[in-house]
Every structure is written in C-alpha cells, then in structure tokens.
Image (cartoon, rainbow, N blue to C red; front, side, top):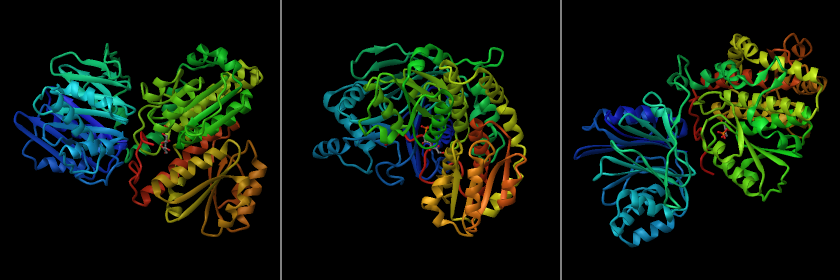
Length: 615
Ligand code: F6R
C-alpha cells in the first residue's frame, strides 16, 4: 500500500519527486524517502514521518539537483515505520537502489540464502532482501540490470511494483509489477514511473499501464522496452491518454480533500450519469450492459463483492436489484469470499465494486470467481486499474480522483451506477411498469441539482458536530435501503474521528444494542418518509424512552419525527431508492466536522491507507 514515484529525464528530479510523493501520501504516510544521483554524487534521504519532513530533510542536503531519482512513501507491512525501514533500499555493495510496493512472501528463505553468502541487512524489510537478491543474481551471473531483475523475479513469491536503479548505469530505470499497480508516464525525453498517474499529470498525459508479470526498461533518449516476465517475450506497449486534470487532484481552496470530495458529489454524479440516462427514450444507455444483454437477462443470481465502503454500496445494490429487477443478489466481503471455496454457476454474474480498482482482497476474489468460470462485470472509479482490467466487462463511475482516505463521492457514484443497472435490468426483465421506470429516471436526473441544494444548508450539521464531538460511542440505525447508510455513516465516523460507532438495522436494536442506550449515547436514525417509516418511528420511541440522544435524518417537512428527536437534518423527499444518496451526504459532513473539531487528520487517518493493496 505504499506509493512509489521515479523519474528519468532532463528536469530536476527532486522537486518533482517530492511533489509526486505528496500526491501519493494517500497510499501510506508513515515514512518516506528519495534517492537522487547526479554524476558521482548521490543522496538517499529517508525520514520517519510524512513527505513534509522529507522536504525539510532535503533543505539541508548538499545534493538538490539531479535528473534521475526514486521516491517512496510507506505504509508499513514488514518492520516498524522508522527511518531504517523506509525506502529506497540499497544493496550490500551499494550499487543498486530499489523502491517497492507490495509484499515478498518468501523473503525469509531468500534472506537465509543471502545471509549464508555473507549479506548483512540493516532493515527488517522484505524489500531490502529483494534488492540484495537482485544484486546477488546480477553479480554472480554477470548480468545487466534488466537481466538480473528478470532472473530475480522468477524466484520471488508475492506482490510487487518495483523500480530499480543501478548507480553505474544512471541513464536506466527498470520497473516491474505483479499485483501492485504501476503506471509509466511517457514525456518528451523523459519517463516517470508511479503507483498512479497523479505525480506526473502536469508533465504528461501519455501513460502505459504495466500489467502483471511485465517488466519495462526505461533508458534516456531510447524507446521503452517492455517484456513479459514469464515468457520472456517483448511486448508492444500501448500508450493511453489520461482524461483528467491537475485541478482534479488539488484541494482547490478546501481545507481537506474529503470536504472537497463531499462537495464534488453533484458534479461527480453528473459525470456518472452523463450520456447514460436517455430521457427522450426513457431508458438507460449502458453500453457494457448492452454488450452482455443476454447474460443479464438470463442471470439467475448476482454476487456483489467489495470491501469497506464499496461493500456498503453493494448492500444498497442488493436492495435495488432485488426490488426493481427481481434477480436474487448476494453481497459478500471479498476477503471472505476468496477463502471459502464459493459455489458459482455459469448463470451467475459477479460484480466487484472498487473505487481504486486495486484492493487486494477484491482482486483475489475476482480471480477466484474467474477461475470458477463466472462472468465478471466490474464497477470501478479508476480507469485502467487492475480490477477493471481483470474483469470481463464493466462500468466506470467517473467520479474523478478520490484522494481523501475516507471514501465519499466514490460511494454515491457507485450507488448511482447500481441504480442505473437495476433500472436497466428491470426494463430488460419487464419487472417494473414502464411509467414507474420513467418516473424514476426523471428523479435520477434531478439528483445532482437536489444534492447541490442540500449542500447549501450545512450550518445545522456544523452546529450538531459541536454538540457531539466529545461522544465516545455512537449508534447508527436504518431500515431497508437506509440500513447500508447506517453502516456507512458509522464507518465514516469511526475512521476519521476515532469515535467508536456501530451501524445496525433499526429492528435489530432490540436484540442487543438497546442495552447500550442511555442519556450519553447519540443515536443517529435515518427515518425518511418512504419505506418503513412507521416502524422506524416506533424504534425512535423506544430509544427516546431510554433517554438516548436522537439525531434523525428526515424527509423535508416531516413533523412526526421532529417532535420525537433531539435534532433533525432534512433531506429532499424522494423515492426510496434515492435515500441512500441523500441521507449519506449529511452523515459524511457530520463525521467530517466532528473529526475536524477533534483535530484529527481527516485526509490521512491513523493506520489507514487509501488503497489496501495487501491482504
Ligand atoms: C472507507 C474506505 C474503505 C474502502 C475500501 C475499499 O471510507 O474508503 O473502506 O472503501 O478499502 O476500497 P476500494 O473501493 O478502493 O476497493
């Protein structure tokens, strides 16, 4: 889950690598390092802490200008997050330098062999073992750097996205991947290699996504060479164009990325809907579903896979698809699915949902489903990421880059995709009357505008955040479509404010959690008009009679819950299928302002990283 960025060209590498690492900090932020070399001078600067600390370190470095360099921001897997374990790592003879994202699973056995040969290790990392393994193979077999990396990787078990540099060949970088993402930026006489394209978007939009088992040799003023690590055959790399801008990955005047991304939701959803809602013909145009229409019509079951927030979107998908299209749906944590020998049928459709498209468990679950012959239709935000490349077909959410670690706009745009899919399936299967579909399409189209209006009334939420920012526990309750919203609201609060929070189906409260309720316990209830309104009103009364402090998310103009709850937040009146979107926004904002009041690092919560590319 680390971030790597490297540069080879004519610009000064240091500022470029520092800025690039800063953009990759969402991938890990416990230590950072940069190696640069200019002529016979080199400097490997590493710090425990963030990229800002690394910036300070380089202010006092004698070497500040170089045209080649490797950078890394770490999320610790092997060894503590300290300076010694920080990357880049150098080999014993000091000739080779490496940055690595991933885990080398057989590092202990490789290390034993190397120790017997007299190698010594400074760090506790698997990465330092890998660079020495490459050195050993290079020296003992008298190979070039490219050949040595190729050889070494044949014996490595695990996941890696690596960049390797040989101090004696300063015009070359070698990079390879298996299971950890790598993108090569191809500029004018310059190359970039990074975990994603954010570090180099202002320099080039031409990218090559390296696939698993591929290795590339980048040499100054020479075309890129890509080869397959298993078959050893050359590959003609496909250069693709990026379609987003630098502004998309900057805070744009907001205090945090998370707040910017919350406010971007109307636009993100507009982008998700663009060209897909055909009001004139009253239909959804999803070309990937059209291509696979037969499969969708004959699907006897849909299995949705995901982790965290994406799994919550999947739960909303279950309600949507079962209710509107009458196809049975199962929603599984990818991390469980992958290890339980799942039973799959040829008529199943497996839908992995992932913002990043890099989550290791979701990717592994996709591979298992593939091995079992299932048809995989993915929902992903990051174009060209590993998961969409592993699927048979799918749909992008087009929410734009999400940098804040807590997922916000990705969730609502995933739900929008699921609404579109459910409506399309409903039509394909004649499961809903046409006039009902038409009405829902009109409502779907109004979502961005309504969200815009909702976001103009945030003061009551800021006020509420002040009332509740000292809470130690919170309960979130919802029924039907609003149950996943309760889970998502609780996850948002705990991950950024470190307040313990639980989401529950409201009716389950009586089976245990009600014991927690007293005058100290804030209970957030999603109590919108459509759906199980009367039932949730009874649940609110049960909480009230136990003196719980009730914050209710209600439909505009609701008077009943207003009388019962201590605080209410109004959202637009809508069909039930849209409440997960309207109700989630205020919960995101509530968590955000509570976390800010508690001085938490909202964009980079402790122990977390944006893409969980390790198990
Ligand atoms: C929570 C959050 C995580 C992710 C999860 C899956 O705010 O962001 O729970 O949703 O790690 O990530 P993706 O969607 O990238 O597969």
